[in-house]
Amino acid sequence: MNVNTLGASGGLEPSQGTSAFLLTPSMLLDAGTGVNQLRNEEISELKSVLLTHAHIDHISSLPLLIDNLFETLVSHRQVLTIYALPDVLKALQTHIFNHVIWPDFTQLPSPERPVLRYMPLTYWQTYSFDDTVSATPFPVSHGVPACGYWISCPTGTVAFSGDTGLSDTTIQSLNRLGALDTLVIECAFPNDLDRLAASAYHLTPERLAELFSRLSMPPNKLLITHLKPQHREKIIQQLHAALPATQPWQVI
Image (cartoon, rainbow, N blue to C red; front, top):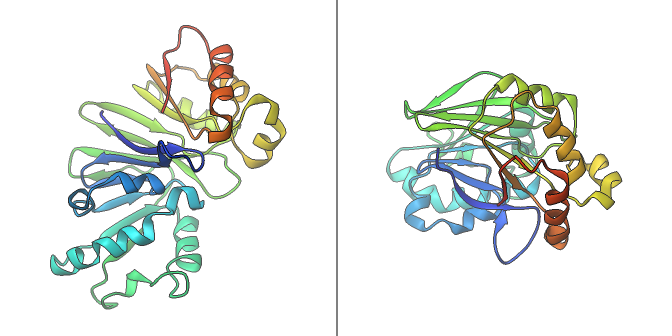
């Protein structure tokens, strides 16, 4: 499965934005600042957004994305659907789309025909899109309501951890998925910030290596995301030392 990485940074940097992956021309996974990479004609094709959790680096482009789409959605009588855990949707309703920070597009242009719809997700239930792609949310540990996604299509499978710390919850979820073509997983901090990583429910190279050692079936490909820009080079050096030499991996 080919995934277009629009952004995978753990912070602000000129080379790329924060978490946003174009799974298909009509579907995003997360909506961080990486969405800025899309052209207007590509934005107009979007119909679905899957969210891992409600932290700002994963949702920051949502308000302006819906604003850009508003006229297109109204004229075609279409909706943009946000798929997320119930607590994540509640956070969006309470703190973002509340007519204070941003308009509530679930009520616009009218409550009877809004342009925005929320779809609450259940762990381990599979949701189908376009008859070719399916997404299954699974539990991860990030200190707030969060999930990863197992994405399946005819050309392969990809698991996205989203943000996660080292935990039995995440390891059990990944092992339940079984064989994976690709695992996309974070590594936010260097080893010397281990205490911060633990308290923030993020990974370091050593924590990622421990998680990896407890997987029953290693993925064919490991893609590593969410590096804090100010620590990028150190994290990459430490990943070379920590990860098995036999495991193909790449920072994106």
